[in-house]
Image (cartoon, rainbow, N blue to C red; front, side, top):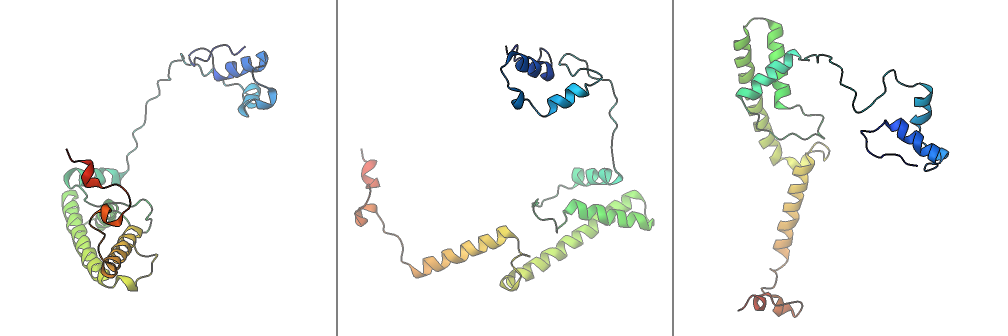
Length: 190
């Protein structure tokens, strides 16, 4: 019939084969891969108890990975990253770009390149902060697509909340005044 459901006994192919032979699975319900596996079986059967091959794992490092690791080890980036924003590069990407540009010039040694790149990144961040403060003052003039979605939603919510609080009087002090619901004060009296 269904033989064993334990994954350690047999392979998925032998278990499906047993289901088909026993009639527990109809031929029209068999998996797509079943016919391909039957026509082209693997050289080594994919069993649970087969030992893993002893293949050495290659270490893959790019030159920029070493620089980025050094940056993250010494200076923790203090930025929030939006994975939906593909236009803006992260601080570490900017740092690596600056570092590679300085290294391509070839005038300095590794430590000097690193320090110069940090200084240039700090200047870029300072300039971007100044630009962002000036652009926040003229924010309604910007195109809605260029604004951050979170920032625009927050500013919109604050604006609507301020207009609501300015136009409507405050809520009633207690529910008993409105005549609806439960008097909360009377619930906690002992």
